[in-house]
Image (tube, rainbow, N blue to C red; front, top):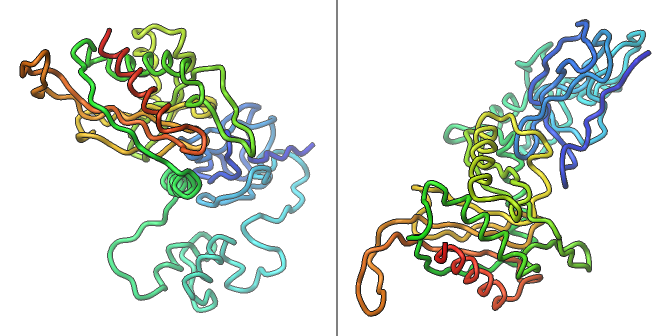
Length: 347
């Protein structure tokens, strides 16, 4: 009996994935749940296990190819009957263009490159994206194809910028009452408490409806070698600051190692971002679609401030709130930001 492994739905809003690396070869025997392939999502690499024990009959999608959810990736078992790979149409095996994936053919068309004039450097003479880009002219500087996390960051940020009419509100905050080694965890707790008072910031816009969410699962932006990822810290309203700090350390370490599970990257209701020492004075962050608001923490430093008519030195920073003006009014966003600051300064 043959089993076809299809690209599963890997997360909220994702319609495609990139085959990052095959962990098996055709003809190899595998057991059920053995790792088969690594799929690159918009935030991390997900390892897909075998649906059954048997021989790897056919690998149908090459490394580096982006395919839609539901595409058959590999066949386990069966009689070895040929299934046409999604990368090569069975009607054009003799032409040079038939030795290129649909993605490569599209890039060649966009760049005006004649595939018939190229000699492929890939396996079995396959024409690669690098072959096509190398033939395009004029060219200047070192170039790398946008793939994996970076490709999906480009798509996600472009969509957010195009679709969301965003406005940013900024205010100063005295962090003298906050343990700075637990800064982000403390901000998560304050945000979860304030969001209960300002539910339109813990919402989504779906068609002609505003969906008010009754859970407080906050995303936290984490910089990794592959790009920015946003793991989700669940139940921020019911956890203590110490519990949130421990969970933050865990998900941040997993994000940098690329071992986050798909479920840990979806379902956030609001996002907090802080770049620490690299944060700068303030930021105007981009709303993490499909959320409607994001809060950013500027660099906290000892600065002169006026207290009771006297100039004193205090650990001070700026809080920024960027919000979708279709859902959140400016006055409510400002009131939310001030409420978060009040909670931070009162701790």
